[in-house]
Image (cartoon, rainbow, N blue to C red):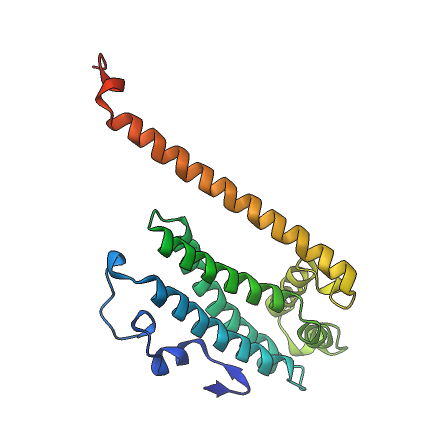
Amino acid sequence: MQEGGVWLYNEVFRVTKNPLLWKDYEPIPFDKMHPSMLVSAACELFQHLHAGLDGLESESIATWTKVVEPLELLYDGYDRAMSIFELLAAANQTLEAETAARQGMALARGFGRRLRQSTALYALLLRIRFRPSVSLELSDDQVRALDVWMTKMDEGGVNVARNPAKLAQFNRLDDEETELMRQFVDNVKQGTAAFHLTLRNGRHLRGVP
């Protein structure tokens, strides 16, 4: 399940019992997806992603191949899973399916927050970035990639991760922003549905050429 202490995203497809995660399985029609499948898939995906992050945080050798390359693979798995649940959360569906999609989104946000606020991972990136020989070991593109990762973690709250009070406040504000964004999306969906319903109502179309 792991290579160099880091979980590889595709491995989950080889061991799961959830048909949504089978790699060589005929896609399940959207209207045939049971909400329990979504919740189970989310739990499996993020359980393995957390295991991968555990391995990365325990890495003692701070090099590009030992830290950044596995981090890119890990983030790719997170990004793909996140995009799926974002799509499902935005789709018009049953209350049960919508609840399941939101549970998946909550798991995704939890992992993303842990990744961005990992002080162990940030310390590894700092060791690579500010090593005296960095200009000899890494290309300009690799150095820029390191800067992007550290900026992403700075913005994600890693610098307050060791202060419980500040971290709690940071996460509370982040949760409030997420909830406001969710409410905005819901309002747009409801408004669009109401508009379509109005268009289908013959009374409102009388006299329209």
